Length: 143
Image 1 (cartoon, rainbow, N blue to C red):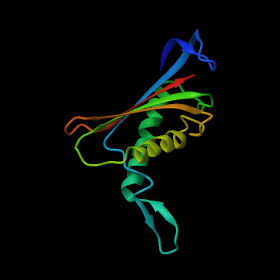
Image 2: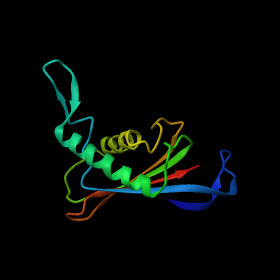
Image 3: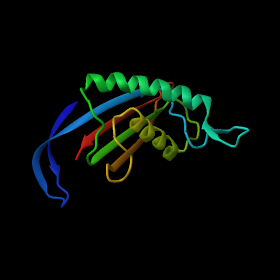
């Protein structure tokens, strides 16, 4: 948790205030939830085993990080979310699918109440490459 001072209000005017900033990180590539679905004989769609394993790891990791930052309730106010993916290889990946995986997991982990536009008002998405060092860093700022 980090405190920042100074922000823009809804009218775009600068004012002094204290806003909360939360930082999270996960290691490994973030699998897409949408494009890796499995269709069962019943016709039901479920995420792939790869996604389900990653999701379980991500929830446990985010829970530990949430406790350390003393975040007791899901954030239910306007937020700016910065997500920086670091890819360990140069495979082609669809960044909007990985973004959806992260936002859904932040909701499932109880960090944000919902990923709708009334809460997640700003999204900054960055991608980088570092050989064999994949992961994601997430910064959430209360507006």
